[in-house]
Length: 477
Ligand SMILES: Cc1cc2nc3c(=O)[nH]c(=O)nc-3n(C[C@H](O)[C@H](O)[C@H](O)COP(=O)(O)OP(=O)(O)OC[C@H]3O[C@@H](n4cnc5c(N)ncnc54)[C@H](O)[C@@H]3O)c2cc1C
Image (cartoon, rainbow, N blue to C red; front, side, top):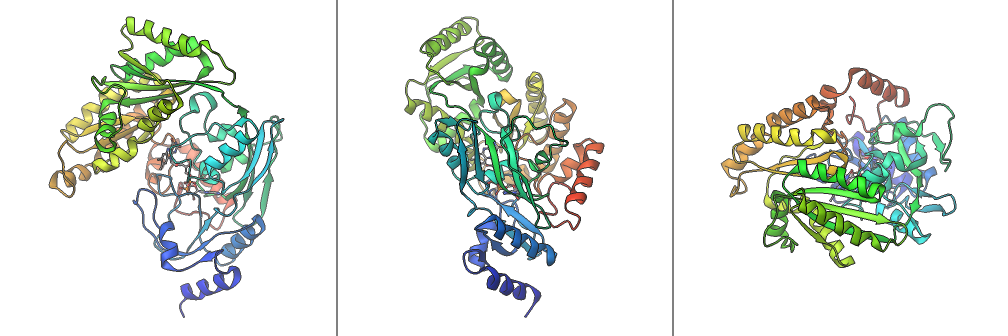
């Protein structure tokens, strides 16, 4: 019997069916990432039922010098939850650690286990008339542990910040099996370093998050949602600045969609477009949310937008007049990635810039894209209120799957990504706004990160995980 089958037998006899899966068919969904960019082979999938069981699994891995790969909903974009090809990685799925441990509407906090889906955390907050604002297109399947470990962003960062801003306390199983218990809901706690923050955005390289205490907010009772036609991204940025002067923090989401993106949604998903008859060159999806009814809000918003039409900044406006219409506007935004997948091959970038540099970036990037891949289509949509663009490319119109044009397009991927990321860096931006590093962007981190920051990251990794067993090969090598 070889080492791999002996270890599989030992794991199964220790934790049994359900908590330990070793068959190829059960391992398969965990052995590749959401975008199918990485394929590996796992020794087994471990699914602890309790934190104590998780600790004993981590101790087993540490004793046998096995690399551990924490897994949430496997919806992330950089291959962080996929194993390598060695056949010796233990995937530790948190899906059975999915209890809401407590809700404190008075203190505006909630404590949930890492395997809770984001949607179930939002529902738990709503059940006590509170609001948890993190919102992502993947919220039905991504898990709290994954959201914390990727420091997820989403559509309400403008008002509430990223995942790291929404956490008060954390419980983490360290690589040697010890439990770090920082699960408190204190708003003020200046007792030395903020240790919990080391694990947020670490993509499972420092420990396995088992639970978190989260900040809750007052539940919005009223939404005003509008699709707003604009000429270009510079106009969208000006519009945000004008609207913030009028509405301040009431603005929760400000999403940018160029016509190249909405066209794909119309074509592949047959989504009705409020601007069907004359689509503008670009549009913004704006959402204002209010905790208390402010009956004048929709009227006031419509009035301000009309004034901005007169000034020429806004080209057209469609207000959502019902919850159904609001959901429809959001589905146009949320389903752009799906529409682009249906269109065929793509080259993706998740970048952020100081908001005042977005227009310069977009015009400069268009020039280099066209010089490198003539005819490539630019599908640059995203959370523009946060300076974040998903700067994606599709091959020239009419390119068929498997054709020479598609091959040529994909052959340019590294060159174009290098140019785009260099441009972003020269304008003071980031090559990874919200999707993290995983295994996809390790070299980019080496290239663009401040060398002192990179050195500190590597020292922290060695200090917490001296045997390099926790998701090794991801983020920092
Ligand atoms: C349709 C769609 C829309 C999306 N929209 C957004 C968006 O708007 N904003 C955004 O930021 N992201 C977005 N994403 C990306 C993704 O959903 C997020 O990154 C999400 O936070 C990942 O959670 P997950 O549970 O799927 O994590 P996984 O993919 O399972 O894991 C991600 C990383 O976290 C580690 N990890 C997972 N659980 C733990 C744990 N308990 N302890 C330690 N490490 C752990 C893994 O090892 C891996 O490195 C989107 C994805 C899709 C498919």
